[in-house]
Image (tube, rainbow, N blue to C red; front, top):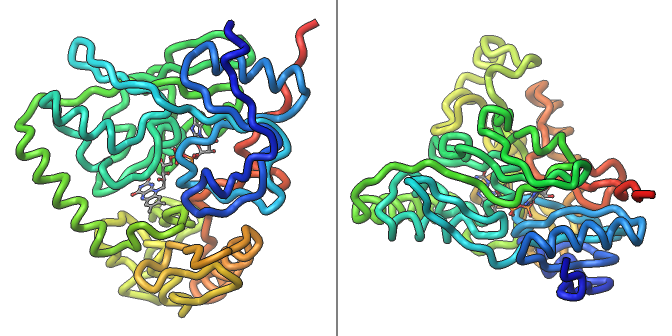
Length: 331
Ligand SMILES: Cc1cc2nc3c(=O)[nH]c(=O)nc-3n(C[C@H](O)[C@H](O)[C@H](O)COP(=O)(O)OP(=O)(O)OC[C@H]3O[C@@H](n4cnc5c(N)ncnc54)[C@H](O)[C@@H]3O)c2cc1C
């Protein structure tokens, strides 16, 4: 292990590393670009008795104003490999880069991912998706590192328990995504490029491109959610069912109906264009976002009797699910 290769920064502002541009400092922060460096990072957290977490592109997280009291591990670099028709992409590679790479290799089926501003690792964890496709449609298996067993292992797609913006990785804090293997189909790259342009255009039409945000703050509400009485909702609000591409109720529509588009607390504002986007319009604090989230939940529940559930993940707050306890020291 080349521990010395690991460069640890101290008190690194996480606002620099999130798309929201919000978040206090990480006590420790390390870029990792190889298996050895991942392992060196886990050892560092263990030796210092601090919690740790992985941060991808920081496009789906809200980091608290207090920051994170442990080690933030940030995969960088990495590559995309092709073997027997299967594409293997390292965790830190951006979704857009994989789209570009697969089209160059004449592979189709990943175009939808062009506008998801995250890494492969973060997108596996949250089963990212849009335009009717999601990671679970293309993942064959995940190369994961098990920090308890201290070994890498292959997790087949069937064992990933992918669901709507969900996977078992959210509930298996000992597992880190090192790489994903994707199955795509050979096809006409020019047609793929056209699709990429069409998806990009659609996104520009409906979202605030380039804004400081964390994407959708809330999950949309599938009709299958146990607390949702579809008939009762549609009787009361007939147009709520017409949410375009969302199979269920679009959270953004509920927030819009609750009259909250454009509502601002401190530096955080609910987008005028997309009710599910919270935007940092300048020097927003995490606390502003937290209050806006609470307000949206309260108003939507009061109006529709529906509980909104966060899609974004909290870091550095009490009970943040994304943080890992210090690793048990080996005697
Ligand atoms: C403008 C905008 C548009 C968006 N559009 C979409 C969309 O269309 N569809 C969609 O699904 N999402 C969308 N998102 C949300 C976000 O881009 C996705 O959820 C993305 O997959 C998150 O990846 P990330 O690398 O940024 O993860 P991060 O935000 O860095 O992390 C997310 C979670 O994954 C964990 N994690 C990250 N990497 C690893 C790893 N290697 N191993 C273990 N855990 C890891 C983190 O600890 C954290 O809990 C959008 C966001 C923005 C800002």
